[in-house]
Image 1 (cartoon, protein in one colour):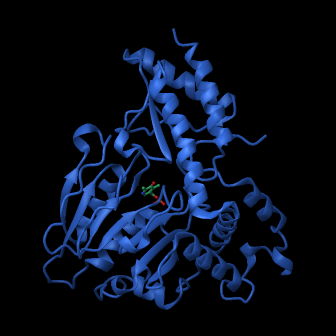
Image 2 (spheres, rainbow, N blue to C red; image 1 turned 90 degrees about the horizontal axis):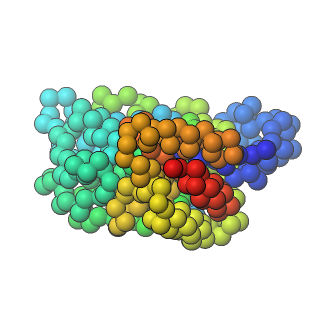
Image 3 (tube, protein in one colour; image 1 turned 180 degrees about the vertical axis):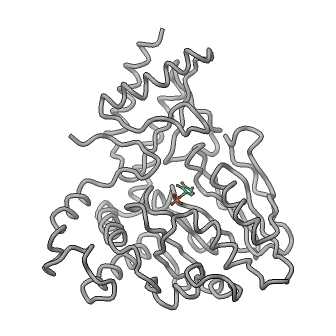
Length: 368
Ligand SMILES: *Cc1c(COP(=O)(O)O)cnc(C)c1O
């Protein structure tokens, strides 16, 4: 039996995608081989990677003057690659300034890496309230090479309510846990990046979408594997790309296109999230700690209303165990936040959210 998997990542994939991958496992499209066995430079693999790239452009509405890369190293390596390529300087030169908004643990990690290569200005932070809101967008620090935001904060469950205006400073956004979850105007950004394992496919592939004018300024000492210009020149094939991941992402994008694309999934996701937030806001046992103005559609933390420490702990551990026994798995909150969290990415059907709510309604009755 398939479970409803509420993991923040790696997370659920659409069943039709897994089934198609299974039928193609040993003989993909009449080639007599698995995609895993194909040479990345072969005529067999070429249409697979082209298909994934084209579908991503089509579904996200990526303008002509943007390039798409399929890299490795996760979103976490982008925390380094972005400052190295967009703000890196030759040895001995004065570091460039960058602006970053601190909205959670991933933003903090991006900040830590960027501060190694650039003069970091954290222009606003929501750390004062445990990151349960998105601060009003600060203006970029003068002369910033770029302005970094974490669009959807996977751990605390916030999402930017609107794209901040940054004037001529390129806006860079980590969209790991929100890519393709609803329409997003790519033209407002200089660079977007996402690890695949939340909303796109298996772990191991990172998507980078970069405006052409930002691709070429890494200083000479930056290693080849960390340079956008080299990966772009080689069409994401400077070395062996994450071939199987690119193939599965293609299947996921085909599934999404058949469903009606990003507009359609956005509507479904809003409905799913509204169902769950409406339930939480009326619940006598659980609540959402996140400010209503910036609640995530994808990651929804919820906390027992019980305030007594040991009793609260007991509710949390019993909840997670009993939910798992009912086929609703990976509902524990992040270890740094506590409570519970339901991640309801594109592949989570509305039936999964309904099943979770039914389970919670019954669970409430067991709380004295
Ligand atoms: C999961 C996640 C990351 C880390 O991704 P890796 O691919 O594991 O490096 C970074 N940022 C956000 C917003 C995430 O959700």
